[in-house]
Length: 434
Ligand code: HSE
Image: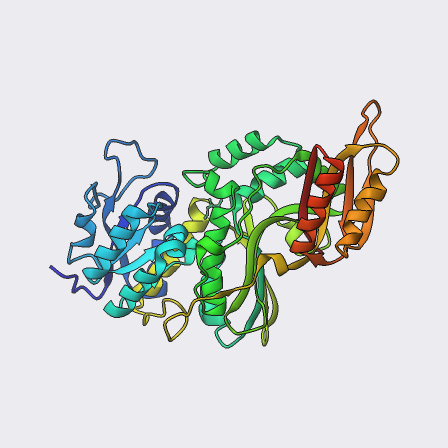
């Protein structure tokens, strides 16, 4: 029987992990403000879980059923909207697709699904005239989807630059401030409920990349193919680079960046990479599981969004905001653009330009710096700073070079030439955001 009670929105919740549990808690603790805001009760009718036997940390209201059969959510005519927070792609896609077929509105936190397989779901939501909202899928509690889709809708966005993964930022912060090793810091992030079920998504940059694809769609109105996005994580980042960067006045952060490349409306230069961020830049001061996004827009100017990017209640806050919008029966505005999205033209990574930090482990011997400088000069790279920290008793030293702006292509060529000439035991480089 369809829900014909105008005083309530009946929902099904798929997933009772960190975010699902947070949503149950928030629905109970903030019932009063929810009803005052939208004039309806939000009633959780049924919860889909993978394992019915698993012990849960939240207590469901007495009328709420638990099932492991997704059709009990998708096919129930009384359910108005489905909240999908199970993560992963295959089951989530089946669930959302089937739920749309049965006329449900959708609220999801699933950035991986929307980034990699989102277009057919947006198309189906449009065809069925259903709402598909996903505020919780990017940057946790920060209302960045709403901001780009609605609040900044009249602007051309020039660029966006952000810290989009709470787990990586937590790990980097702990390694920087407390000298923790990588594994211990990651375990702490997992214990706090920030990490994905598979934490390699966080530390290898894929979670940031998924979020960046969604932000590119919202900011520039184009679909950037996930498989073409340059992605580099923090797994191999050494404590030595974090320390040396700090001495030079920078923090290393995992950055997601996208900008209009300028040759056409659809050409986007984008990537996820660890970068040195000057201590004087607000992004460098984003600590722990916090996320931040810096946007430059033609009319609104420069905006900085900062907030909790992971965790149960911050993420549930974004999910619930979407549910309130559904309860208010807002008209579908799922992509923020009126027409179907064209494909992005991809600016070649080799042509992107930046200043760079480069560290090499080299012999402390005459001519080494001359040879390195020669390889850099041959590619037209000019250096702004050189630092060598001699260590007593070691013949090998870390040599750090900071460059003026150059291209990725020139840097790669210079590194190849240095490798061939000097065979340094280790050579790493990172972009520098000043
Ligand atoms: N694992 C994600 C993060 C959670 O660490 O940011 C929010 O998407």
